[in-house]
Length: 208
Image (tube, rainbow, N blue to C red; front, side):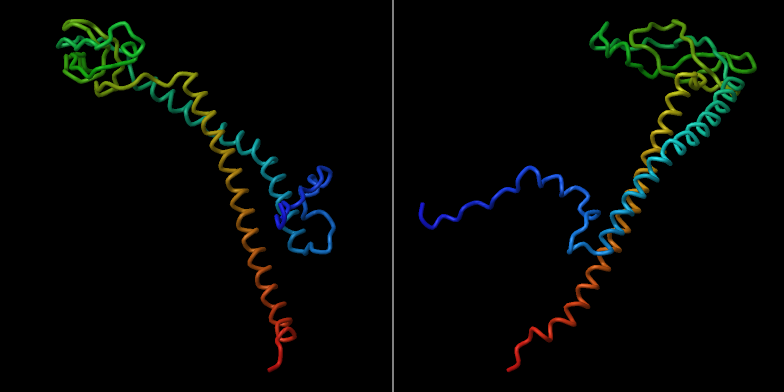
């Protein structure tokens, strides 16, 4: 059709890789700040890759020692006990289902305290149990119902979580540092452009 503007020509495939790391490629338009920003990014990337395993190891080791001490303290201050259910527990709407196997209902039970006397406490039990049923619980030194001591698998899981968080924090610090540096470089470039235009503008102004 006459007068139709042809679409812009696409760059040949051989020129596309040249866009990558353009700040490191020599060209007349590249500024010193562009080269500085490129090397800063490479340096921060290398620093993050080098620091991440070390940070993960240190964080994981600290978490392992902390949770190992916690598990030892829990094992020394908690004891398994047998509790007697005082009232019937409602049945699950879908008995025998996977959800019913995971569901726990609050209930009152009787358990012997540290002094040997029975005391009434609340805990969570499986649905459908009848009054008089016995359930295994963990109690602390005061006779209060509590959780079981941390297992080795739970400790490993928490250690892995802290190690992953440490790696993510290291990567986030690197990204934040690069973003701050890139913003400073951009402001420097804008100031340089303003100064250059202030010197050039009078020569472009036509006299009346």
